[in-house]
Length: 144
Image (tube, rainbow, N blue to C red; front, side, top):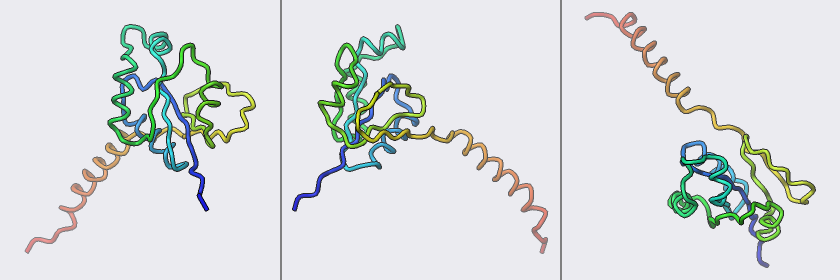
């Protein structure tokens, strides 16, 4: 008996990859067995980022280098989410906390990935704890 792999679909511009993108893709991957990442096409990316838009070929290559996704594809132009969904037939569609995509009644399970907690915040908290520890430790040491 062959077990069906759970296919997850997620997408985004991924114009300048950062830790939030990595978190989003890893979270999406954890929802199933096979992750398809759709990179927004150049037309859509230019509308959002203007002159700062990174070409789709480079964004695709950058996402592939992460080795999180099983398949990375540049989206069609004009953007048509229903066509993409029908083409890849995911079991789950993962959306980022900031993605407002109207999917309508697709019949697919849609899961919103929560925002990553700030790594800068946790680094600051660790530094503060270390400073506190250093401030307290000298007081508790006994001189010999």
